[in-house]
Amino acid sequence: MIYITDMDDHTDQTRRPRADAVRNRERVLEAAKVVFSAGGPEASLEAVAKRAGVGIGTLYRHFPTREDLFEAVYRREVEQLSELAEQLKNAKDPVDALRRWLRSNVEFVATKKGMSAALALTFQSSSDLAAFSMDRLTKAIGSLLDRAVAAGEMRGDVSPEDLLRALVGMCYMHDQPGWQSSVLRMLDVFVDGLRVQAGTKAKSHTAKSHTAKRARPAVKPKR
Amino acid sequence: MIYITDMDDHTDQTRRPRADAVRNRERVLEAAKVVFSAGGPEASLEAVAKRAGVGIGTLYRHFPTREDLFEAVYRREVEQLSELAEQLKNAKDPVDALRRWLRSNVEFVATKKGMSAALALTFQSSSDLAAFSMDRLTKAIGSLLDRAVAAGEMRGDVSPEDLLRALVGMCYMHDQPGWQSSVLRMLDVFVDGLRVQAGTKAKSHTAKSHTAKRARPAVKPKR
DNA sequence: TTGTTAAGCGGAGGGTGCCTCCGTATCTTC
DNA sequence: GAAGATACGGAGGCACCCTCCGCTTAACAA
Image (cartoon, rainbow over all chains, first blue to last red; front, top):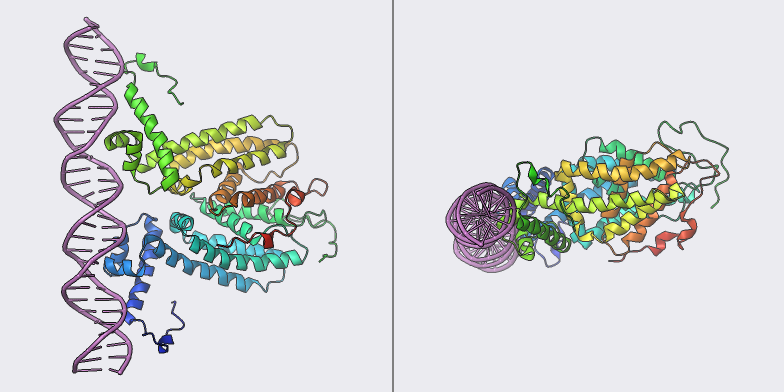
């Protein structure tokens, strides 16, 4: 699925990377995703190597530490999230776009639930990874947030970083079945809190309680 | 500090627990708190035993699994949080009381930062512990939330569980210095979202309390 | 006090997983 | 096809996990 784009850059002095090395690296990543998803972060690395069909030495050459392996797996996930935002950038209603990104995120996390503990650990020990994913996701969420703020729909005193962390935190704290709906509800509350609090604009998006409450005609969005 | 209250119940057939056993258990718990705080959940149990001045066998008799030990340590913390709510129950302004509990919580977490990964892991594998702490903390936060709702200050469609998870999630996602102020800001947003959205009552609590007019440029965590 | 006995103590030791090291195999290049 | 670079695999040393059991000590009775 994922290929190094500049695979032919071996012209400048460096050899082309060996085919078996590329293949093995890929195999290990794939195996790691499965094993960690099932067994959590404590899962044996030897099990990963076995499932990948490579020797333990090979695994360690590609990913010298357990954290390196987590990181590599995680980086892929982040890319996907980032692309998601790109698509939503063109939606009409900016508040709704933001809300939808947040919601899609929850879904995304749901499919990776087994890895949550692993990620929590990794995040804590690798500030590099934190920086990378913060950067990617912050930009994603930031572009959505900006539009809503520019449209006068949301307050401007909350940073994308903050919003992101709140989101991720909410997702990863749950284990019970049904956690998703709980998070979705919290997100709605949160988005409500983010809206500009002038009486005219303050309408809630939350399901039943405030459905048809659109109060007065909106004021002109001030820049 | 903590003594079994019914220590004299040995009248009914059972012996009184041995003094050295009680003492050792206490020592292990104390040592575990320190070791885990410093070294995370991966820390060696042998290190804990050593620090406690007991044999490894003794540690395992009291806490058969690593998770049991985490649990025991964690249960104490929860008790403290629970008591905190008790004290706040009598404050005048209910919204403010809730807000203050949330904030105190952040502070509390701050002092236990090293254990966060351990707790995340434990929480995920021990549904017993999850149930216990959920129960305790839910009641704590619930009593505060109820008052605010009853006073007509807050919407009633958010459960204490939800609120709790959002709080904890926010806290445990951070590692950077300065995370506290970020969480505090998010909490304010959140509480704003919780308020009833009628025009008269809905005014932001954050606007003035934070010097940031536009927080984003300021919050630039640079490696 | 002293004796009896249940309860608790500690650490040796077998097992598992982590990670390194290096002889061997395979790929790239010419 | 040959040479040289690169990667492979798994044996082995180490650290930690956890159990097991002979020894110690505290609680209770007389």
